[in-house]
Each structure stands twice: as structure tokens, then as C-alpha cells.
Image 1: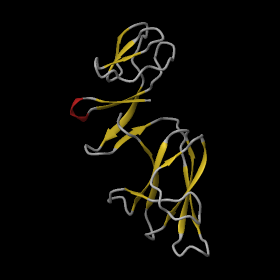
Image 2 (image 1 turned 90 degrees about the vertical axis):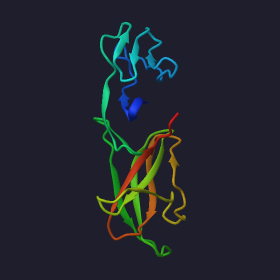
Image 3 (image 1 turned 45 degrees about the vertical axis):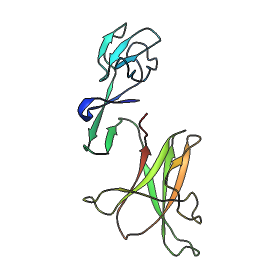
Image 4 (image 1 turned 30 degrees about the vertical axis):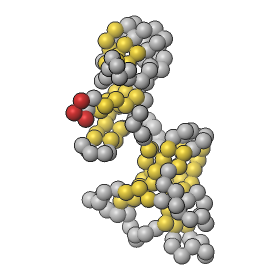
Length: 170
């Protein structure tokens, strides 16, 4: 996937596979504002439109929304991503914990977010990798694709937990 940021906070989420023969295209070249496929010479605009080359169509786009501040949400069809939450009760833990299980992807950073109610802002919360450790980590990076369990301290009787992919702007 390629995420490009254009003028006036216009974002473009594009499939990185060239529409010609599915080679992986390069990231946006900031000096030309173009995306190049070096396999066969196709060239695409910042928004994925075909400019030149043997590709007969644009790069596929993903639907997205931007809140105008700091949340970019990209909808990836067929991803099949699920999170399972369960309570963890331990005799040595004064605060009950929630266990969040999900499938991680290799070399992707994750954060745990909590929202007390739907009208409240989601915030990053600390977690631990075991039921007994102190919840003091805020970023998890998976060295391999695998099933992962993260443990968070329950600070509210109700609310919404989510796992977020943490992206950094290059």
C-alpha cells in the first residue's frame, strides 16, 4: 500500500501493485510528484492516475477518511482483521485486566487505543505482553506474523478498546 499526501491535506491510499503486471511500484518521488513502476516503465500520478507506460489503468484506490487533524482511516476490503477481548482475573493483580488477541503482521507497529464512550476521543493506553507484567509499553512491533496477546489494565467499567497500526510519515 502507498499513502500519499497532496496539497490541502488530500490523501490517497493506493494499491502498490502496478495495474500492468502486478509489479510493486516505487513510493512517490517527491522531486517529480510521480510514482514509477521500474518493471516496465509505467508512470502514475500522486492520486494513482495512469500517466504513461504499458499499464492500461490507474492504480487501485482504497476508500479513506481524514478527520482534518490526526486520524486517517483507510478501509481495506477483504482484510479479515479481528480482535478478541476477554477478561483476565489474577490473584496477584489488584486491577482486572483485558486480554486483546489479534493477528499481527511482521514489522508493523501497533498501539492499543481506549475510548470510554463513542463521543470521547480515543487515547493510546499502556499494555503488557503477559498477564503479570506491568502495563508500561505503548508500541508493539511484531518480528514475525503471528497471533499476539496484549494485556491492558481496566480503568473503567465500560468502554471500547481497539488496536491501531502506528504509521510514521517518511
